[in-house]
Image 1 (spheres, chains in turn cyan, purple):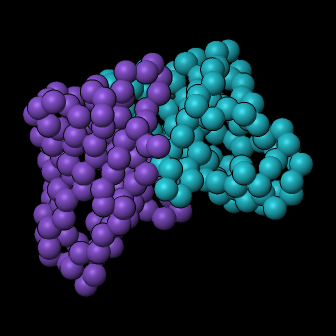
Image 2 (cartoon, each protein chain N blue to C red):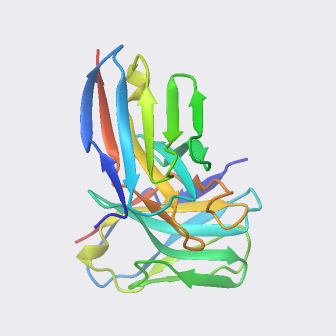
Length: 115
Length: 111
């Protein structure tokens, strides 16, 4: 199993550009989520999905869109990039809700810089 | 402010010495996860604790959850260069589908 994969690994955008961060998992996990990691702030949940066709907002959803058309894929879209979105983005997946009874598996991350 | 407070923010330890990292919450922790992250890489799951007073060990790393389930500690015995990295605690604090994370502790092991 490849586990959780993310592409690209690095990306530089100009303010106002749009792009999609890709995330895929081959473990047949129902739950997938996107986090951003910023210095001194830990990981913050952006959006999550509990299954194909179902998505919901996390604590910092503004400026990001997601969709879940298949169990395997959970892309994150930046509609109009802003410097405040410079961060490291992690995708994670788990069997269930991703909380007390389910370990989340993380991808290697995407380092995004918005100029 | 962080729902989970980790301390210290960073530490430097001589190879062979022990170290302890703490993760504290004002709320009950229904599940507490410890992860390790190396620079430029994703998070690697270390351990999960659920019950008050629970303690788990893997190789030279021991994690404990206190009886009140509001604080956890991660202890590394006889540290090695392979222990260097960022350690993060994540916790289920009763919100569906959401783990809260601490800011992380950066560990440097000096030979």
